[in-house]
Image 1 (cartoon, rainbow, N blue to C red):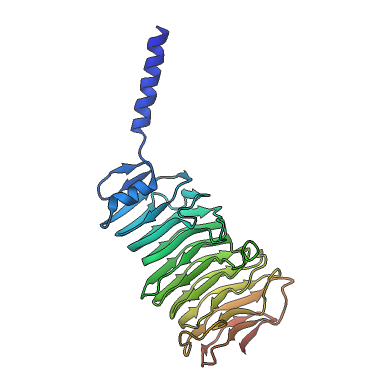
Image 2: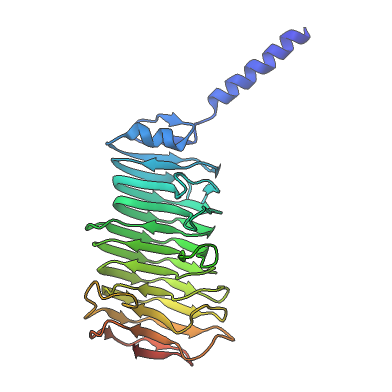
Length: 309
């Protein structure tokens, strides 16, 4: 009798395990997988959406081709924590295009100081409704082509470092010869480096919140080190008191004049200093030597509108 009961319990457990839905499901086919890489590999060079169930995952994947969307079934409930592929990121992207929607990436660190939620190496990228938390980097990468990267309605907090390795890491650090758009997103509680660093000829940075009040050892809010044209508008900035470099909020062509900067529009922004923050920073510091289109911006006491360096 006891043996029969034991077998019955084991059989029920096996049936229950088999009936549990797989965490990674291809939306187009309904096929489920236990590991994210298995789901990615099944798409090969085609197109597909991977639906990700709520949960905390110590998992990662490399996309080697195709057009793949990584989508949480419920935004904010699919959390990837602590595990990277190739010592780079949770998602290493080398396909034709990639989209990430509603995922959370946190607690990511690697030996070279660039542990990220996403490393984009090939293909266009769209990121929406996602969170990047308490890691060395949020999104890193780019390619020397006309790549288009869009980041919208996402949160970046507790990111960046300049003390773990020789080179700094940043909340967002992207380099390409195409276009980068960062819109309607929140940046806060930086732990080093810049909040947004872009080496791209065309940028759109609009409708974002940069709250450096609780930041530590941070640098610029927006760094365009090679110059750029485009639009920086309708953002809110609060510069904190614990900065490594407080001299400018938006800095243009600090390292090179790779791309033209003439006509870069900076308008309709609001910038303030947190209590105790050093006074005197330039809202826009320009090293390009070109004529920027710095329009009407609302600046709190202690911030200068423009500085030519």
